[in-house]
Length: 622
Ligand code: ADP
Ligand code: MG
Image 1: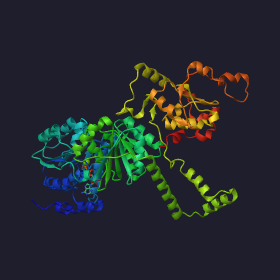
Image 2: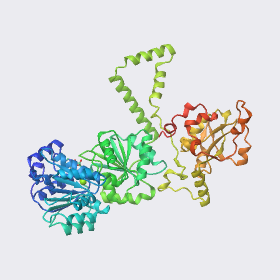
Image 3: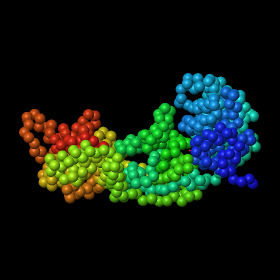
């Protein structure tokens, strides 16, 4: 056998390509490149099996470019990819490697892009076409893509094309291209259906197989967190917050709607996050990837399909927020990190009943996945304080603070505050949006479905009577609020703000579900959705405000009617029955919805500015 290939120079590639490779910083060919390039340069067909992230693009792009006749301005290479993202990325890779081939042109064609534009571009011509099967077929049928001069056809991620149902289109294309072409098929796995295609359409293919656990997978640190006790979103933000090497993350969820929801919730917590899913227009999807690349986004919440093949080197973390359906999907997912020779981290959330899948993944990747504990609130707070200290030190070092020193000196003298008191007030103000302290949130209740938010996986709420559930669902969907009694009142020194805070933060109830609060001497009433689940009531009962357990219970209609009149300044008589609202339930739909924004209308809710301005920020801190 020959010596291992150490350098691209050993591969007989033309000088302009070597120059480009040096510029992009590739030092040595990856195993799949070293194994494939000689065969492909020699014009042979090839069947390549290698996991994501092993460098397959260059493995076919470099020899294809080497064999190109630059003077012939017609499609000589066609690459089929399962998704538009991938088509674009492969086209970008060609462009990069061909940087020193003057006149070179590559064209991505995919569905969702304007036909008019594509037709014009095709007319102008290109050496390499990279496209999704459907759109390529379209153009072949219209005659807008002519492959008479095709020399090389590449099927990239063939297993994925199979999985996405493109295999018939792919075969159709194979049948409608010149028979004397060279064909290379790449796939992360080699299911029978792919083998059959290869058998039918490839001529004496060279088989190259790179074992799964190669360098790139090894460069990914795989960990999992057993989902329990804490809402997955809380877990995610805590984990990300204490990760040392966090730069950017892709978070995988199972559904398109989940991409949007989770991205929004992350945004609400101050992360630069966006969704990436198949429902988005092509333009939007490209924008998202571009923003992730250039650092204006740090987290992309994606479905498997939308994230296929994304190659953004700064992705330091892949979070499997929802466990993938199979081990292949897992391998594809984690291949989004650890790119371009960097270290990557993959974190998997595993609900108790998903343990089997975890084991399957370990077997498939031939690597143990390490369990991690959720960072405690203290750890997170410690990290925040450390960052804050660093910020202060940096600011003192880098900024000219003379003006501010002067302001503070004056405050110190004129107001008689001590410098550290002023500093504490400023620290509070500076960290208001992102408090240094981490508040415990409850489980989080999705009141729309009346279920704990993590009930979806693993932890089921206790069985309930079907009728109860139906009644509750109906009540929630109609937006019925009713009055509950809690055993803490004015004489205990409680404020409405504290009650809202406790119910929202510790009960995990969103502020918008909390209606009016009325304080009485030794108890209070609070409006909450009717028929709260028993489990949640149990939780709320135990919450303490001013050292007193709330011992919450729903008031019956007659009890509500008998509530004493609240003390209030005298009013014209006609106004009275508006206020004596003992009767429940009340609608919260439409404009009457008790948002905190109009809390000032409810006089017993305390001064509005304390908690009325930004309920989202205030109640969902962590
Ligand atoms: P695959 O198609 O197998 O998933 P890619 O072709 O997308 O893998 O390559 C994965 C990453 O590795 C890309 O960021 C690519 O630029 C980088 N890469 C490829 N070949 C090399 C190499 N020889 N040296 C360094 N980085 C490389
Ligand atoms: Mg690839």
